[in-house]
Length: 441
Ligand SMILES: [Zn+2]
Image 1 (tube, rainbow, N blue to C red):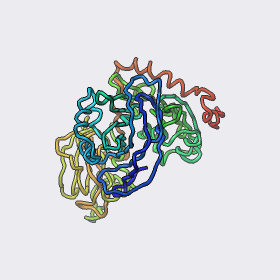
Image 2: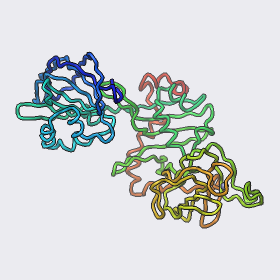
Image 3: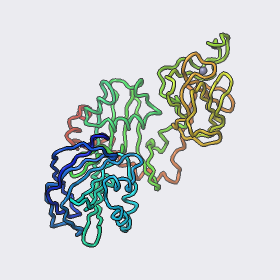
Image 4: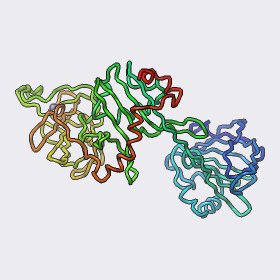
């Protein structure tokens, strides 16, 4: 249990003895006893350790006998080990000793807000040991012994299992996914991969279907969560889309079509999540403020003030400031003579400076109604070699395809995954066997 600051100290008298052998993955049985609120600046829970652990098969004999109290500390922002040691009235000399242990300094000093550290302390307030989860699969244990302190890292690796499942949509992607035992996380990954091709709000129809191959991660035989999406086939209104994950030599994972084209376009169609299009591209529009015919050379997306505006593509900031009727405006220049313009902004992203590079999807500013605007909206322009194009209709350039030199490796890596989309192993999992779409195949 975790307590908010102010009522977070659970005090117990020290009882029980713990023979701690490092290198085991046994769980400590914890018994909660009487509470006393105490004004403390760290997020702390304290409990006695009532079980006695003794594991004969511990690989490394970092063994210590602790007659003590386990104190769980939730790390808060700006906490340091020095600060926590002071607050728990632990010896700073012990902290110095810990830091002097080989390889330990880097492991114990980089604290993350929200993580839990467990300290073991004896009746005299002396530090007996410390436990910290370093990652999902690694736990650090430090225990005092005759020679000082000993540390050990216990590995408990995640198991990766590959699953192929399929579903037919009758209401939404998410409901179809859930019915097939596929997590929301994987459904979102499917929508992300095809974000440039399929609008999952507007374009998806009953009868659309998909086959997906993905990882499931578990630990100690218990399912944890889904891992990477490996390959997916989506049939939308009779049109089939395929994507496969490819990890290059640098370890970067990206999604491609089976022939190595990027799934991404070089530009987002709309650079924000908008509520509606309030004014389309129109060369003969009567201007709502000026009340005379003036071409509308962009598209207006109505959205609440403060809605993040994203760079439509990778590029460079060529202007950031105030410009006539545009009000606060950002202009980005991109490869191949494309310039995108974002007008009527309420403010700019704090770090945005003229001349700086931005990546596609990066937040550059926020919706507003500065300049000539009747309400909060984004005015968005797409210019190609100086000519104004309709951002809703312009053919967006593809992202760079996979380099020719990687194609052979790409094919070797992805062929089995792509083959699996067409012939999912029947009955690979009970959920899969129960999927109606599969039975109909
Ligand atoms: Zn406009």
